[in-house]
Length: 92
Image (cartoon, rainbow, N blue to C red; front, top):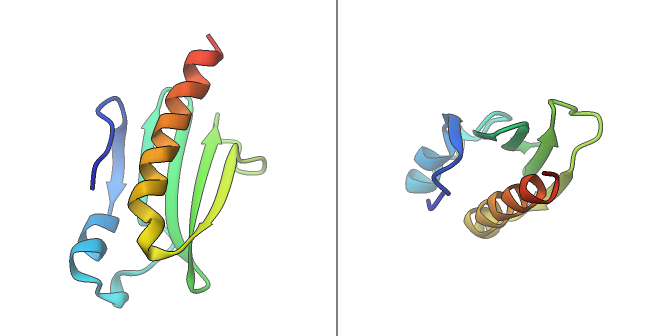
């Protein structure tokens, strides 16, 4: 998985799943990345992957919520990282 350097990986169980495709590893908390006041969170909920981008821990109003197919995960994560960097730069 390709991730941008400025992000801190808070936890990552997604990499193991992507390597093995072991469905027993699917759960709500699979990956969380942090950059400044932003979080990127990916989990498996009710038979689907959901990607969230939140600012200032405001989970009630996410900056982004995207439903993903498995084959979209890596590209969508990289796109979300680019978007977060852009949001941060544009807010300065």
